[in-house]
Length: 115
Image (cartoon, rainbow, N blue to C red; front, side, top):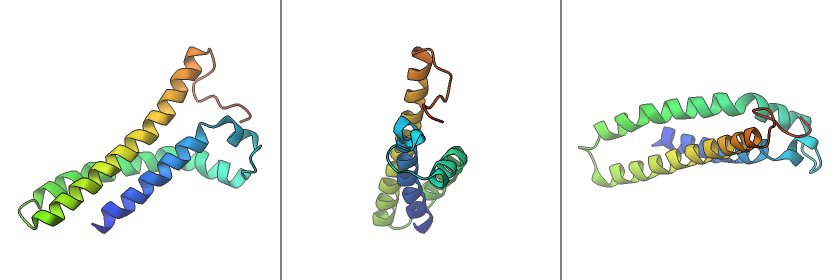
């Protein structure tokens, strides 16, 4: 349950990173974002996303193998896992949709104004 809660927090962080990462004003520093935050997001978004996906892939079978225990614990754990997968999918969709739009508009893949 503790690991799942940590993964849930990482999912929220990933959505925030994805929103900032795909925002052109973030890279132009017009909203007061620091270079340090830009570097953190540029270098940690994808590894954090992959680690989060891997941990979730490992947690799901572990949760279902304990289905014979407390039903209340199992239901709460499944709901939190569903929220984690939803957050992971949301952050991925935000990134992929921006890259698809870049390709449609003739810009390079992973193009960000001001970067």
